[in-house]
Every structure is written in structure tokens, then in C-alpha cells.
Image 1: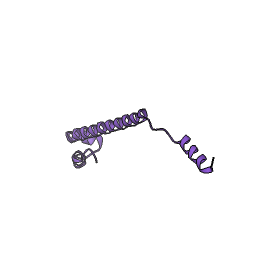
Image 2: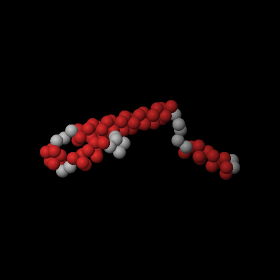
Image 3: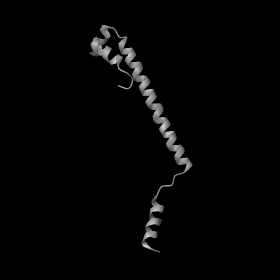
Image 4: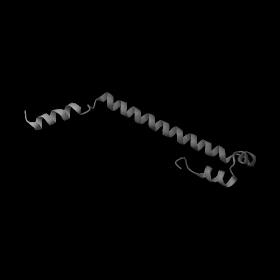
Amino acid sequence: MSALSNVREMARADAPTFTFARAMSLLAGLAVVGVEKVMTCAELSRSRRQLAQLDERLLRDIGVDRATARFEADRGFWG
């Protein structure tokens, strides 16, 4: 055997095999991450809507003025 064929064999032995199960596992992982991202964005949007509905007393309690609350409430879920 030549040195080149030895290198090829070693490369094949260490290369990870790509199977259908591995592909499905990767796709499932991506789906979970996607769902988590959507849920996080929905929660952020809901929290900002609730912040916009707080009265002056509650805003003072949390240390936020009306302008800051309005600014945060107007931001999109991506911001």
C-alpha cells in the first residue's frame, strides 16, 4: 500500500457517518430552537403590551417613567 492509500483509509475511518437518524436528530434540534425563539418573542411582545398599560403609580414602583415605558412598548419583538 502506498502512503496515499493509508491517508485515505485513515481519513475515512475518522470521518463521521451521516445517517438518516443523525439528520432527523439535527432537524428536531433545529425545530426545538425555532419553537423556543418564537415563544420568547411572544413573551417579550406580551410583556411590552402589559408595560404600556401600567398606570403612573405602578411605573413609579418599578422606576420607569411614562416616556421610557412608551418607548419600550413601541419596540417590536425583535428589538
